[in-house]
Length: 140
Image (tube, rainbow, N blue to C red; front, side, top):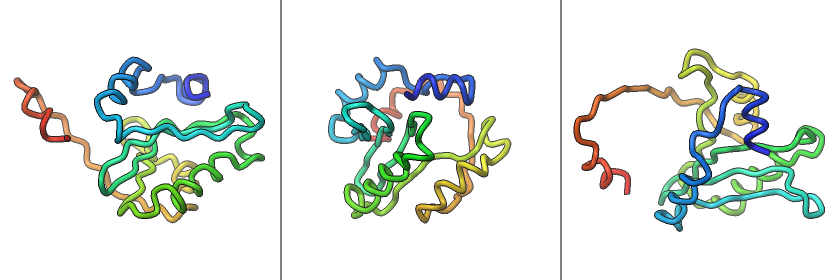
């Protein structure tokens, strides 16, 4: 569902390849989880959750074309917020901007705010690193 949706709507591909996700899942087995919604064994919606002690970050949110009438994404995220990650300090829906922060996708932002989410300013920085290996320990 995800790859065709990203191609059609945004002419892009997922940030991570399947092999990268498999590698990350292997390395951080307790921090990456997939949640899906099925209708009679047919996948209709899903999201990948990247989890830390305080945060559950929903990424790769996607659903089939019936998502508005079925409410599959709403159902999924309501379940995640109210049952699975209710003890987390933050639930992060990710960015609601396009073209590297040039403008806000107000429809996407509206959907996220329907769950109580609020917009936070996201600063973007670009750093040239000569030696990135020490950063490996920063995020673990």
